[in-house]
Image (tube, rainbow, N blue to C red):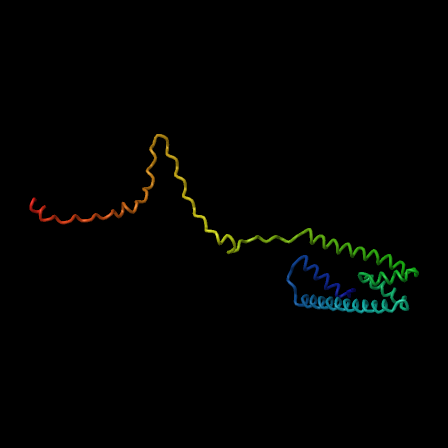
Length: 199
């Protein structure tokens, strides 16, 4: 990606403002917005060109061996653009290793493919080694604990009496029902006539 002289001036100004914040004029704001739009457009265009390049590469690979020259040239361009060679590319290059350019590209693609595999394995192992934070386990209502009767709190033990002192009287025991409600006595029968006469 290449910048024009005006775009470089705007970029330099934006970097200076980022390092030393200061109020921006309306003109500076508009220049920065135009530069951001240009960068977005260039990135989108680069993505479209990459998609076209990879589509052409797949077509030339499918037409091998008749398209060997075009395929090797396109593969070089794709590798320069950061393309990760696929197993189909490695198989095609192995079939074309009789050509010096194909042999050189095969060696280069094997190195890139090995790096890619190692990076993927390292990413997976890092994900396995560093587990996420554990969430605390919370007791849910129900289950076997709900079937059991809750334990009653035990009464605190009475303190031991001081030496030389008699222990304080404990709580009075609950009275028996016979003490609270004594049994009724039957009334005495009235005296007979003989007892009245004798009395």
